[in-house]
Image (cartoon, rainbow, N blue to C red; front, side):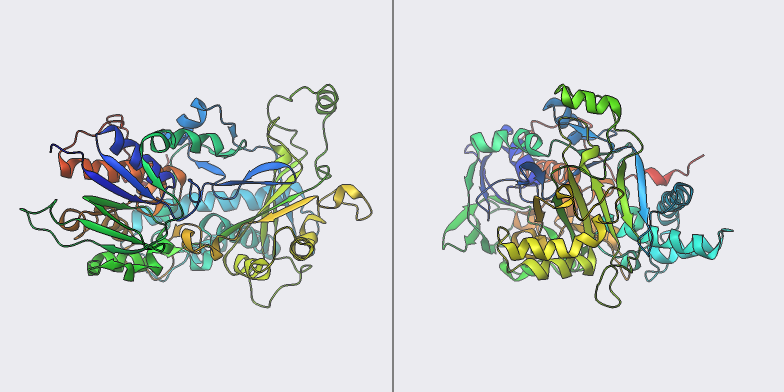
Length: 520
């Protein structure tokens, strides 16, 4: 091919940026159409209480052979596996004793491991209607725990909903293995994803033609024949009235966007591809950051205090006497709509290593509860007193249960509060990331269909990338988005006869899962 092929990419998130990186290095002319006025997609930061925080991804899921871990190291991004004491707050608002907390936590995580293994090995025989919650209940019945201990364990298990973005009663047991991540620790990105995004975007920002504020409203991909592959151009139409033409097109829009915009494709997408898009579920994870003048729940050790006074960083992890994760189990003390799951979990950012630590609680909320919160604040200006008062009214019953809380102390009055509203963001697909709910019968095949662009890739020059098309072990993660961009770029390169550059041989991940081999 004498002229550079013209490749279009819809979306400047991690998958689109990584895809552009490889295509540009491989000799293609790349144009990125981005609906927002910035890069990053769901990887984005804002300030709360004077501290930079991630509104999207906070974690690197699985540090074993993970390209995001390598990028974090190369950019001196601080990432750590938060360690320390975990708290559980009981239904009546009391701090659960340490022994019972450990028992409930151990049961939760050991049962999760068994559920991954069971789902992986028995997938063909598990009913599509069985949920992760059903599995937890079955496992509890096999214990000799007291009724009170069983209640606490089941309450604690429900907070796995914060990982999948919806209540575990809706999480498919049959396809729970698709929620498994890479081996290794799960690291919190303490200094935010800012430098990681800068690193991944370097080539695209320098050499791609990025068109910002260009929401796509129409995509025409004529069905091609072997003699006219590049004569039948792809046309993309945007909300501003602009039209772009390409030889090949990679759509990296979130799954939620695809679900809502299948009519934008002309001719219609192949039926099996449409079925895959509509079948896979989309989560509702939201985050709320609450910053205080001082971390009243966090007691410094003597050495910590000396280092702070001398303006010296404190090496290593914080003292185990300070809470890192806190779980609020079925809170009877917090008003909420009847029948709605109201469990909350928060991470203390005061427990992060210096200089990344700050007096902020990060709440993870999910499912109907997160929708309720977003509905309450979506019409409010984030700088308004009403916004602040609405969120404080919601979260004060929770943070007031921490040891050290004093309603008369100014240290216990938030200085900043910020909530994500991905469910109101059409460019994120009005949600967070893919998950797999009860009733699915071919979720693994659906993911494979999306990756291959079945009936659209070679036939129409239309390809798909994004976390919902990742290897099974990285679905719903930034690593998955990154890998999916690589994979889509390589598909296009192979079709056009380009030698793909920028991908380390053997670095791509297959669909093997850690739980495929039972632990010995």
